[in-house]
Length: 161
Ligand code: HEC
Image (cartoon, rainbow, N blue to C red):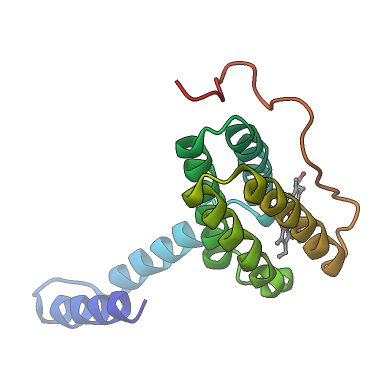
């Protein structure tokens, strides 16, 4: 942001030195850029959570089928979305609680690395309980997450090829 502002002020100074240039015109352009920035679409916390929900379900079917490459991919998708939430939803006070999920993610990563089915199952339960703990902590306890009992999509193979 600072870099952009100093570029803009440099451009303004240069514009002032240009014969026939117009500071007012420059300000209008800045205002219009600011409006565009303000109106840029950003997914909300609920949309990020819906994405996490899909990867949580796929993670289960990947791990349950010993498809460790897919499980690794899915847990990384969850981690990327958690990072996006921190980046794009800093105005949501609930996001302060997000760190509570880290131990469950660490445990899941260890299970996948070791290709350990037992550790995978216990890590998945820990992960799922943590989703619900955070929902309870943030007054969204009515969003109850569970271990899925049917694959989320019929058009994706979860068994390793
Ligand atoms: C920061 C604590 C936190 C953690 C950790 C968390 N959630 Fe959420 N979740 C929320 C909040 C807050 C909402 C309500 C978002 C909103 O206002 O739309 C939510 C909403 C949801 C929703 C409803 C989305 C919708 O619009 O229908 C789902 C599904 C969901 N979470 C899944 C999960 C899953 C799966 C996990 C664990 C892998 C998880 N969440 C972990 C805080 C959390």
